[in-house]
Image (cartoon, rainbow, N blue to C red):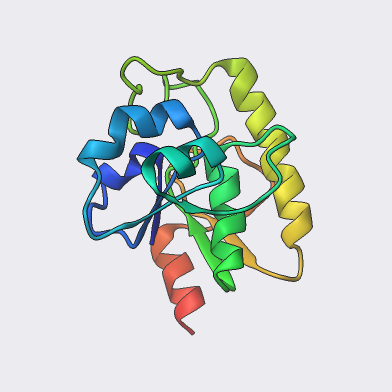
Length: 156
């Protein structure tokens, strides 16, 4: 289980915490669950905190959720079930609430993220089965299934 950014609070026994934002690491490094492997694509965060580096091209726009999908695929995942990938600010900020003293999503950033996810969806066709089981989502690029149904499907 990969928790993206502050989602680890909902699953403190996750296997991995993944985040790409140096400022997020600065604000959260001391609170993270000790058993989780900590991963980033941010070279400065990697060097500053000794995090595992997911060496991926960060020259172009990206978001931590999108990169976590690529990270899961790099670990050999053939099925990925997304939860909490709302990708919208219609109900406020992140599904887990605002980051304190950090940037939070805007309508513009959520629109950009949807494009980044769409690019990832196209790149993963035929390689990884990605199912979006988020309760609410603006993402249209991944197949939608309820969580229980998605879990049944990938367990078979």
